[in-house]
Length: 444
Image (cartoon, rainbow, N blue to C red; front, side, top):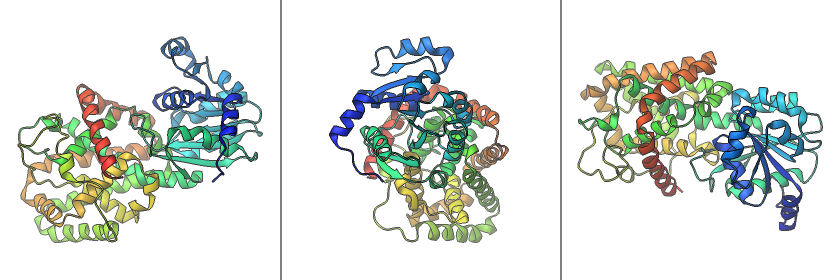
């Protein structure tokens, strides 16, 4: 951790230093906009073949658009590669040699192992490496969210203070890690969360079901609203946002595999009522491991979430919740138990989606009546059996894709599901944004 820079130092840096952004996707644009609007001199680029379009699109912005990464790298004192994890090596090899003498380079990828390897291989020896990662999506306010800073290689005493001063305008919570710690923690807090919501969405798409449009109340209630809204929120983003972490981070492989395994094994117990004691014991052991030392208030309150239904806008009060097996939530806690992961250990680095998912599982497992009702519903209400089966297939499919390390298969599976839900993204994001805002403010 560095000492705080003075206002005079920051003013001098703003006057003399140039910040470069390579990649004007959603997060690159968020950074370029925030930095430039806070008085920093920012240059940015996207793909060279769309330079004229990008330049025209952002002609009224405070940052300047340049033709390609060579132009950005050549004049920037700090270059941030905001590109897909799968492309970091390719882009670094292309533009790295043009990096300004003695400057600093960082990135915004979700897997720092691959990023650091690329920088060490393709950047000149005199370049310092101080990399970052905002642990949230571009649709979330940066204020109060975790921002990881990794001082991997720097020799000048002011370098880290300079980078930290730059990103301070985001008003995020700074977290100081090594790149190895970053990758382990992001796997713990994101890999299974993404797998769960991706599997839910893929199962509904395969069944050709918009759950909020059903008339049988199956998907009514606060917990169900979270499942639907967050699944659609993920599928409204770009596939590479999730593929990079899942495929390039080896810690994520084990966790996604365990999630699919836990879901499969629990579902197998669902099929035989004589296995109810075994299922109950397994769930209670997982509960004790994950939540046994829980103290204080719950992260979420189901009553707060009941208004965020896609089927009835935000005023649904006429329906009752149908008992659900909640296989997706049982599986997450079971997988944490099997992997001996305590989800509370990394709350300082948690994403909004992780806090929401933890909050939902917390609500289920720490409400004895609801948990027992869920176990009973497994055997007494088989209306979810088909949904659970399709969820298992989806979870295993995502696990296989990750184990194959295939970006092409990941993209195909993601975009197939995305296409099914496309008509609902506008409304879902509007309601989902309000839901996320409410949850995050409630859980502070």
